[in-house]
Length: 370
Image 1 (tube, helix red, strand yellow):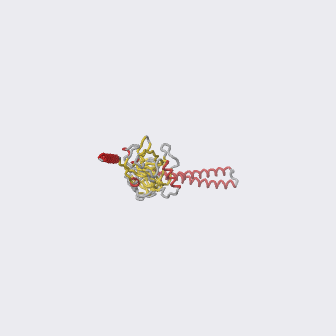
Image 2 (cartoon, rainbow, N blue to C red; image 1 turned 135 degrees about the vertical axis):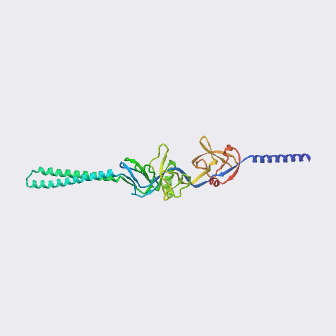
Image 3 (cartoon, one colour; image 1 turned 180 degrees about the vertical axis):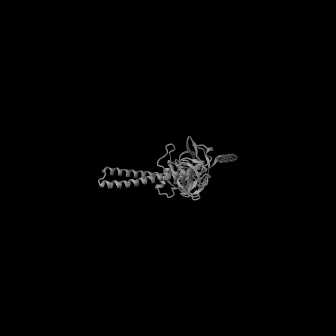
């Protein structure tokens, strides 16, 4: 009897020792967050560096030589189309106009004299007092006089035009830029006087990749009403309140960068945006049933992307996948991973292929919303 009692006692001790060993092993397993891969519709936002330009931005240059007599506006002032901006001393050009008009008057008088002479010669020719050749000479003299009048009229028009260039006016409604010259400065033809910018609306030029261009075109073909809508991020990181619209794009890709330029127009009623400002344009794309995983779940090896897939026993296996695109804290998967599979979401640097872990289930949505 004592012999059986000893055997039972030994078995119980061995059983309890085995349980303790299994418990200790389970406690030794790393507890890591594991999430189930899901597919969901999402909107992607990409930011592109933008070159902001006024719809109209024109340099105002002198078209004649002279001294700058008058400056009628100040830097930063709003002006209206046709408003007088600068005045160049016009005494020389008024004198040229007076001279041209005097020459025209003289030639007009000569033309009248030639016309009277033609009438006289015509009468004498009809009476056969003089030869018919004299009539041809008189006609030629009148034609030459009239040609000189045309030339003189052209000279008068040119002098009037040059005189008008001494009064420089705004070509459209806008804002005056810096005025580098001061009153009394001697200026030459082509000298820059200032710049006028029409900032009621602005253009934002930005370059996108060929992939993004194709996404945009596909959205257009699907009739997505919001595919043309873009947002502007200002230099301080804040969003511009008014949305813009893509108007046009270039006809070919740049050979060096593989990108193509887009142009968007933004309203600017408060005149907040200025010509030459900097910012970023955010372009949005809708993606249906996108497979999304958090960036912390991914590690790179030999220029390839991997995750650890977890099976039902908690065994992790390395899995290579191909990303479609990468954002701040997540990847969109092109191939290699399927919805329903479980992956380690954090701590991937501390485990190895084939290792067993203690999975701690977390929701993928909670990770993607971070």
